[in-house]
Amino acid sequence: KQWYQRRVRVTPNKTTIRKGQLIKMKIQLENPLKIPLKNARIRLEAARNLRPVNINCGQVKPKHKISATVSVPTRRIGKRQFVASFDSDELKDIQGECTVVIID
Image (cartoon, rainbow, N blue to C red; front, side, top):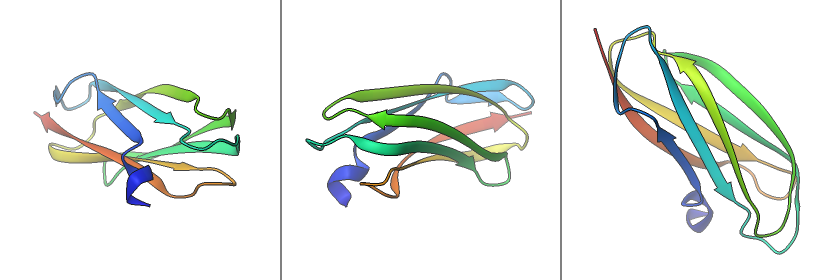
């Protein structure tokens, strides 16, 4: 499981941003398996800052990379952790995270 967890990357367009502004999160994942991943989906969350955002990715081909960019509002001041989770029929609960500082 640890090996797969390093496969999800969450990259913000800024590491410090003002409250109320939109931040863009780029989520990337590579299918490490030799089989396609069916019913693939990504979920982006940030405790007390963001309602979960769900992205359906369909099928991910073997050794293929997928990428999604999501613009999300910043609602609360402080250091906030954004977590992206990847699930499919073949792989479950693969996660990546990043931290963003939200200022007033």
